Image (tube, rainbow, N blue to C red; front, side, top):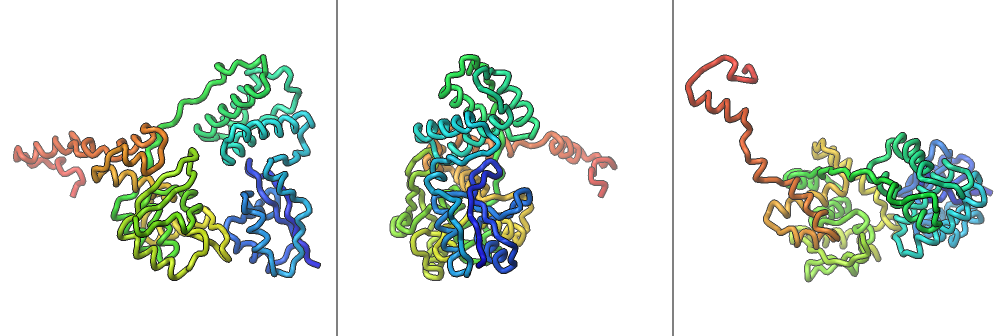
Length: 386
């Protein structure tokens, strides 16, 4: 009997479901057809990101293959509680991880935040791997220097790590640690990349698949995050009112966004052609669609449209906000439409547009213009030499 085993896997600082089997080309191709599944060259197994629906998705995908699927290593309750056992950790450290996980969940942090903070503490315990009774600021500083900084983690990741340590210290009350001395690097000010409106239209025209075109059109026309799009259910779409209901998005906030009139024909054509059952965007057999699939076909559409900028689904959201601002929509309205908690987050788009600043004439143009008006035909005036 052919057997395929599913098991808990901690990989890339995240919780995964490992998929192991004796090599079989047909099964390999069948697995590769599942959006979101990846191959780990270090672990030498396929793995699938854990989520509330992950086990159900795998069950459906492997059903009818003729293989026996062994779920014995997986306890769904253990997954939900994130109580994976780490064989290289001491029992004391394992208990600390589980208590920290419970503490974060008690504060009702999102699954993403719990996963991120948990992974930082796991890295630290593997790095420190010594009794924590005498833990002090220098131990944490050494971790930041030798792990976070040396491996060139981003500034935002570094700041998240500091936040994780603050919760860790507050929970266990280490007397040798002064929270005020755990410094947080200054936040980077990175301006978002945006597409021009012409580039957006070219991108949609170059997207041949109807489902893919609908996905890109709704992200841009309504300013959605990729996660918000993938969670949308059919009853969230109100065509008559031209509204989309976004339920419990980032920051646990509900909001309404509008739908463009020109998007309605694309949407109706898509609904009639694909006939989704529950979610607006579904994979095979009604399975949830993956963000990696969206990024893949977006990259291909950009190639066809001749767009050389680095474009992600979030680039379309940035473009939506920037174009709204350029057409005179107020910052307060854009903040509500995007679901930003703070106006400062929305104000970054004022630095992207800067229409008045971009209209200022360069002194090089002024100098050349004045010389041309003076009638002096100097050879070096033609800077291109043509």
